[in-house]
Length: 94
Ligand code: HEC
Image (cartoon, rainbow, N blue to C red; front, side):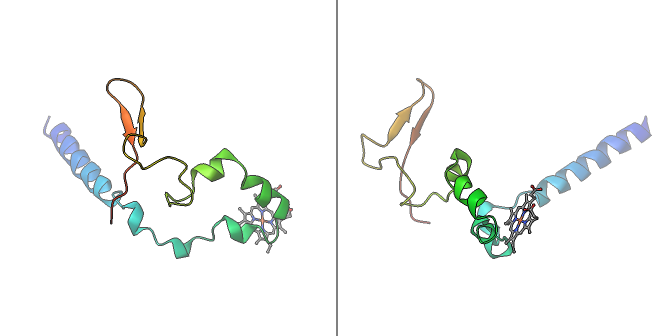
């Protein structure tokens, strides 16, 4: 019985510590360590160019002003899914 309790306790401690290490914020990622897809274009020109037209590539662009197609104006900045859920575009300073 004691062994089982010890296993549960250790499991919880391990789970908690794993959980804490995986909480890296997206802002903490050092993007200079990644090659980025533009670096592939030099050698794989056709693949790169067709890739940049896919929905997957377009979805992964940063949420920057030039890429956002939605409207930030009050009254036009809302998409209502249903009575419990809506998405609203808002500009906030970091
Ligand atoms: C300096 C030139 C060069 C760059 C830059 C480069 N590749 Fe390649 N890549 C090659 C060569 C040469 C091959 C092997 C020949 C081939 O399969 O066309 C290859 C093969 C591949 C393959 C395997 C293709 C297959 O059909 O098996 C993939 C996937 C790939 N590259 C992805 C990438 C990605 C992703 C990047 C950018 C992060 C990249 N490559 C950047 C030259 C390059």
